[in-house]
Length: 521
Image 1 (cartoon, rainbow, N blue to C red):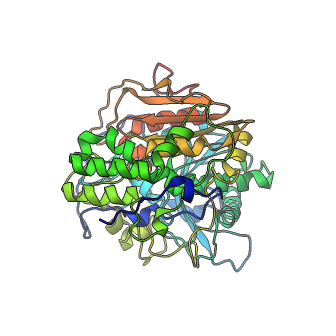
Image 2 (image 1 turned 30 degrees about the horizontal axis):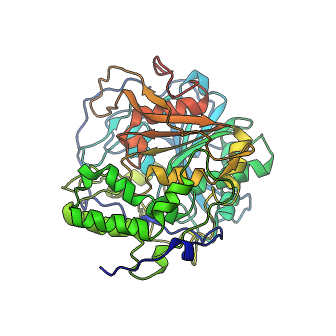
Image 3 (image 1 turned 120 degrees about the horizontal axis):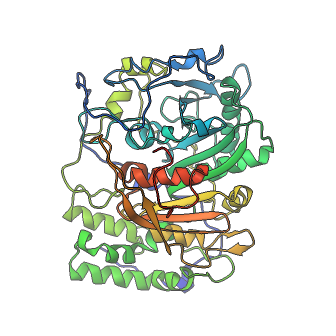
């Protein structure tokens, strides 16, 4: 391995930085290669909270939405009634000849506190389907990687609020049309058009809107939220809060490379590198200027003024400052099944049913998807043609600031077992943001504990930790939390704490350390 030691003082730029690298192209999700699967047989576990579809007429069913009805008892290989839901395509504008359409799956909630609200979920990528979040994370149905089939999800967000999972931008999943955007502002404009059509179809005008998601949704959510704010129209865009877990919100080098060596040290019992490699990594951390960067800027309060942006090591062939890549290559010798999303995983790679399932023609017909679509979990199509997303991270250009100040209800969190976007990288990005008149957190946002209520769980297919599971803090309308045993996809790895976060977002609880039961118990 060629070593090129670069001085931070010489190479750091004070510019705001270039457009983001796509983290998912650096280490794509890996699993056992699946084939089509049939005749799975029923699961016997029973949920605590999921309700069957009501027999009376629904306020969401009308002449415009009857085309989107999903028969909750007739979805292939799901051996239970998933309840009331609607799915299909809606255009991104009101033009009669509009060919660009987004795919959605909408699940009304039976929670009596949810009658005046609607919550959106985005997965990331860019180019990854939000149906992943639906069946692996927080939807009412779960088919987890490595398991036999579907089970009910005791921790679905649908227990709390009306949820809509939207595949976007154009080019993702079942969406229709040709991608034609180059940045997040254009993405927000297209989603604004889709959202008005959705709200009108289901007669949801004036409802409070919340936006949730993870990963590259750290780009999507603030920019879509900012587009909602810009509309200044509470009839359709009455934004009341956002929650993002494990987000990319700032510069990739800051969030991934700068903080990588201390991350490996913290989890040394998992990485288990020898002394030679560990010392080499420490030397890179120092010579690349990363150690001094952390010492100066990851402080509470932070030094005032914009932080300098380190040079992108990916722009230099075989750069020794690309510590994220260097460690990733090294750990794959020791653990060839290393999972960047959850670092405690080991071989074998587990079966992922998602791709063959959503490519089945009977499934596509059942969920009102365009039959015959070759569905991909993360598309090979460039959804920001021709050269990728040209936007800066929302923490770099004032977008996140505007969203925080508009709602005073923004929640950002990280799973501590996430390698692709480690905790301290997110904190570094936030310390470079000024909101409500002050830059960054003035005190470390981990002085309080995250509490998940103790509870009896009878559904063995949907288990979650309870007790004190992490740390959090809150200042001036922004809450930050970290969960100890969570990975990148927090609702998958830590469903109880993710459920608690949504309770906080919706105002069902006052704090993540609030004792007592879930609001739905």
